Image (cartoon, rainbow, N blue to C red; front, top):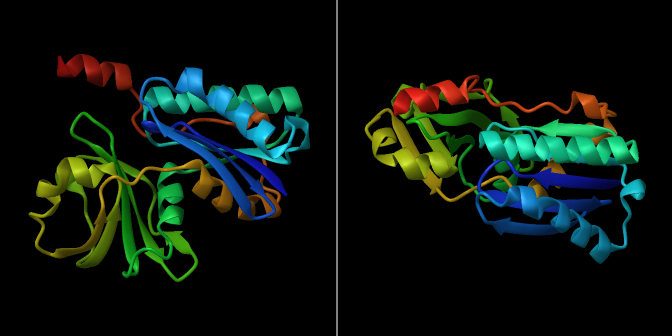
Length: 227
């Protein structure tokens, strides 16, 4: 199994290879430079490992939610590479990638993954955690931080949404936030691991089916309304 993973959905930009369970990753945080960085990172990673694109089994990618521009860049790059090499693609949620990255790190059984969506909103989802797996409890959502609705209980939280709006979350006294990882971002190493299961289940898609998930449908209009 050789899976090439590409993640440009947030301020982080990363690429990774899953070579039968061995993960090799390149990762950087340089906002607004993903378009110029991602392909050279892919080339460097392939050269480092001696793997050619034609030897890869599938390209897996972070399809969002996240940065509108970052998701669009990643999707375009993945489609171009997959079309050229005639490879299947596997889309994965950015929030699931963050959940994967924190398996084994948290002590609780419920996690909230959240990304700062700007415009006083967050992208978020809840997960039930076991020792080596997780299940998303509901669909990914976009909402104002004060409108997050969670059952009473204890939660671990990962992601930049907490960093941006933690004072609002702390006002909800029915929730006990037992662990926080405010700087957590999705990264390609976790994506490469997470995508092994859908790959083995033969859930690869045609490149044309590589589509972004924004959750926020009209970014341009909302930005205009803020001015």
